[in-house]
Amino acid sequence: MSSTIALLLIVVSVLFILGIKFLSSPKTARKGNLVAAAGMVLGLLILCNGNGVSAWSHGWSFNYTLIVIGTVIGLIIGAIGAYSVKMTAMPQMVALFNGLGGGAAALVASLEFMKGAHSVEGIKAFIAVAMLFATLIGSLSFSGSIIAYFKLEGKCEKPITFPGQNIMNGLILLVIFGLCGYLTVNSGASNATIAFLVLAGLALFFGVAMVMPIGGADMPVVISLLNSFTGLAVAADGFAINNTAMIVAGTLVGSSGTLLTLLMCKAMNRPVSNVLFGAFGSSGAAAAGAGGPAGTVKPIQADEVALLLAYATRVVVVPGYGMAVAQAQHSVRELTEELGKRGVEVQFAIHPVAGRMPGHMNVLLAEANVPYDQLIEMEQINPSMDRVDVCLVIGANDVVNPAAHEDKSSPIYGMPIIDADHCKTCIVMKRSMAAGFAGIENALFYKDNTRMLFGDAKASLNALVAAVKAS
Image (cartoon, rainbow, N blue to C red; front, side, top):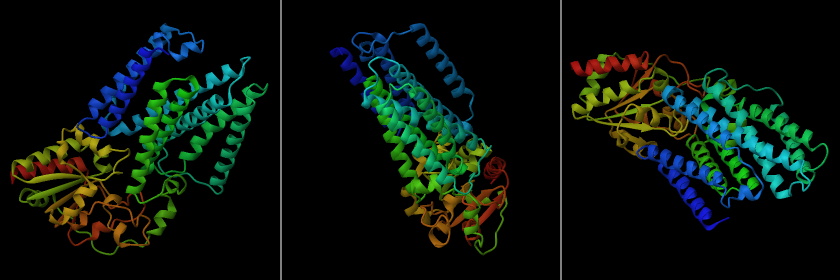
């Protein structure tokens, strides 16, 4: 590899790292996307250059026409998706694109393995392990992400379980590991192709079997985990074909996805194993909280809420998935602007797992041009919630349920929540008294300082805007 190529690969790696860094904040997320995209374009140009690139030392020949056609098709599909998909459907698109990434990584590894298995030299054990790992993880990520997509679409949102499911999954995993061990040392065997195809098929099935028992509201964690799997598959591809840029990019995605998964599980006070194997949200979880809290629900009308908001000093908005479903983010922004004109301090309390993907609420509010400095994380805002005049909960449920602090028998006991019950007056906006994902009633609804504003979130917010303007 020439010194120029080596230097350019370092530049690509730095661009990927900066891209990930910028994505950590809503203010710089767009810049992060552009920086990472620039790194990807540069990496592609280096690969196709041919001046000392490792791939050429492997005897590869490039069909530039196919590369250009594939790139153009990808750009068109990506642009159509970016401009046509609604912000409320962004989690589905993320799941779908992540699955395609995993599938692409699996295909690269599969083609390389098949080519090497039929060569005279065979495949070295280390390279075989990398190819098999990429095929396994990439296939799992592909099929699992497709199921996650359907769950986010509401096609099969509830956990699908049956007796002995974990045992069956464990046996499939043992067979997969056995095939991986066999192919590592017997890649040139006459039956290697059949064994490899069985391995790929089982990996695809295992991805489906792994995600089907998981409830739809746990999809943020699942998407993050599958995203890390895709990154690891890409990194393994990089080892298999000796491509440094792929190793760096895959490692960054894999590590960041893993860390995000762990952080979200911490935010729910649940281990990853409970998300993957606990079937949280099934009838068992609902039964655990069947007793429900005691108390009386106190409804309120929009004009009464408008008076409370208009004459408040500090208001905190807690957005949830219900806001996304109602597509009410623009109405929320309009309401906060009206309150701001009256000198009311308005902030948004963001729970790490609110919505259907990591950062879902941040994305929706950013799309509605809500100022970034108004978005406050749960840990920062909780200590001052007792000094909030009005807390407006829009479509959130389990992330504000005081049972997480008060009821040791609750399925969500110990889960960090936004302390909406600590404010002076809490207004909960919901269509009905339906339980949240955990399948239990929300004790917040029955608190003395809570009032329920029933109805569609967008319609209710529009009524509040009109009432505030008139007050």
